[in-house]
Length: 374
Image (cartoon, rainbow, N blue to C red; front, side, top):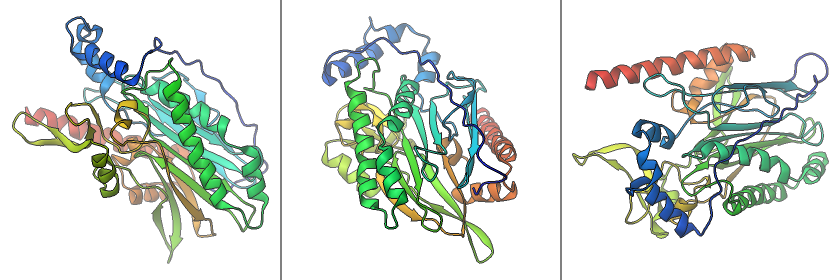
């Protein structure tokens, strides 16, 4: 959104200590064996756990968010907020743990970045990373830390100042950042990313007034949209595409790599939920997206971290941008979100309040549906 008032307030910096699981060692095959053994062998530690706890850990978790210098509860169960502005834009961000169907709060596996000034006032970087799997919160925290570290501030500053920025150069760099982070994560034995990973959607806003652009990079099913004005109405434009496994181009790649794309099947042979990625002869990993960072086992059958790049030229018609995980999009369409933001007239607290009302309603409706089916 455009800025209000005077100059930018101090941009708060916060650091969060991230506890890590025991280091994983060995090849990918060893890690797959360990994952299988832990889940199914009589001596596996996972089998000894309360099955409700294990089920809770293995679900894909969804939360909303966009942020950088978070204030609030820095652990994985609380709410984190951030806001700031400069001469070019202002933003507000919130990440909050979702809920289980029984009303208990999930682990918040979201992470996010919101650099209103990334090396220089005309360059801003935003992103959302929605973790999944038992170590998903460690993966998303790793990606949150590494993407800003690897992004080349000097390159972005130079292209932002140019009258004719080399967007291809920025796009190639953005792709390489995602891939380098993914490769480094796989090599980092302190985080087991065999069956854990994260979505990653990020937008770089750069350029001087009158020549501003957004370059987006997306791997997974989090999403960036623009709310723009046309004919007196606010409309939604998606700057990323949800990379689901049944999207034809994604499905074909996975099939060529030897994977399967199909929903989970119940005991009656009926499909349950979305299409997922599976190994050819095993009911693993069951990933509900075709691209991600991490997910080393899914990567053996075509899931990869290479993001899709899109470029948007900002004009006076563009009023705001929303970056969010599927914790928002599973409840609301892009058009719904534009209407909510429009109705709140720039009041971020009202946006969060309305979103939570929607999520509570749908969660209650799902809960009622489960009880009715029983």
